[in-house]
Image 1 (cartoon, rainbow, N blue to C red):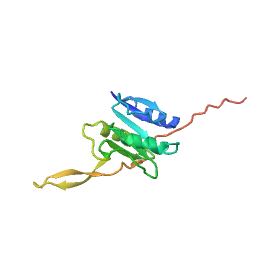
Image 2 (spheres, rainbow, N blue to C red; image 1 turned 90 degrees about the vertical axis):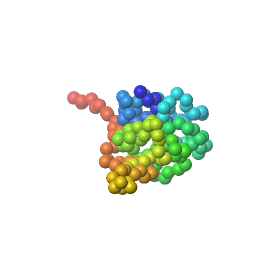
Image 3 (cartoon, rainbow, N blue to C red; image 1 turned 180 degrees about the horizontal axis):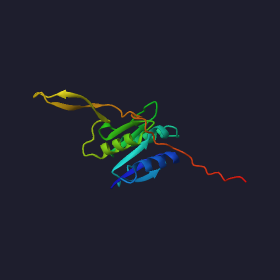
Image 4 (cartoon, helix red, strand yellow; image 1 turned 135 degrees about the vertical axis):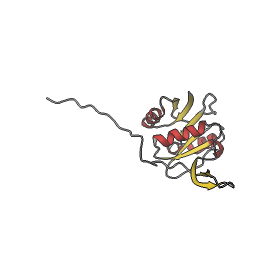
Length: 160
């Protein structure tokens, strides 16, 4: 089982990400980026969009960009600086469960391609056979509109 560090300041999103990745991954959740690169983890998920809203976020995000831990970098509407593309997969909000799982699988694979990659049009080889080429793009959130739903459940007592 892969061990993943989730950096998410919002409690509801922490729960949603944990539920989306359970039971295949062991998730440890923190609300802020650690001072030093975590050593006991296979990958890291960083909600950079939420961290931009915190004070001193620019310094913290610059520190993370130097770490060589495979990570998923979640951007908001305005993408900012991100870690080295050789070990980083970028997602854009809103994040779907499928996109999150696919990005994490890509991070944990032995060969992480620059940024995130998806299959493009088939290309012909010299022998005339079709092969898939790779094209670097950000994984589009909401590809099939299966969002992680955040719902508050409120029980109301029956009034007599």
